[in-house]
Image 1 (tube, rainbow, N blue to C red):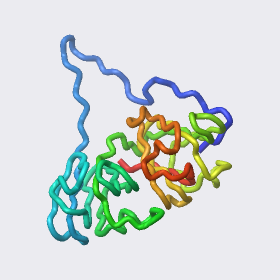
Image 2 (image 1 turned 30 degrees about the vertical axis):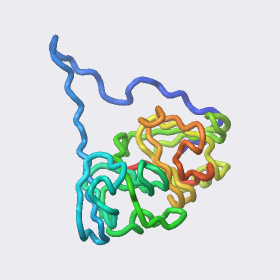
Image 3 (image 1 turned 120 degrees about the horizontal axis):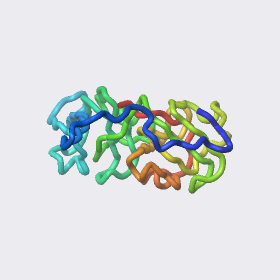
Image 4 (image 1 turned 135 degrees about the horizontal axis):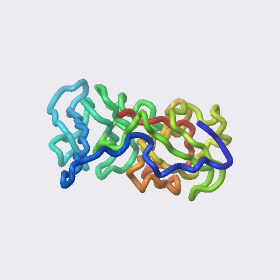
Length: 220
């Protein structure tokens, strides 16, 4: 991470790849749609009723389950929420097993034994991620550029325990309240808010303070 008084200007040109010639009248190829799949059970340890999801679920009770007791992410990255309608505390769900609620909520600031809605994170790109954090709201004050995981902003030269605003140019990230990716989690994405988060309250409905002390990329 580079902590600088003036952040470098970002080019609008593509970072990689080039245009390929195409026969006249031919339709451009459609980009591949990555498959995303999450399986949820209503009991811990992958027991009880189960339901498979390949798209967002705004309310688990309306999606065929009374609750989520365990989950398995087969592919893609997802973000879960404490309440229906994608509200409340956020949980990052990357590929792997979550046999109980502690598995997805073990590092948050308070115990949340429920997950009531979730959605896929479509722009996660672990290899090509870039964002800029700002000391003050509305992209003012000192700046810091990130393109890699940062378990401690302070150790990397950020002089505050807070981030006032941020811009996500590429990929999806999770901002954490404390060093070591602990505490409240806030998912920020390049395709949400146009990648612009002008105020800490735009990080989510459970963002009580602008305290952010570690940031990492979300796995693809």
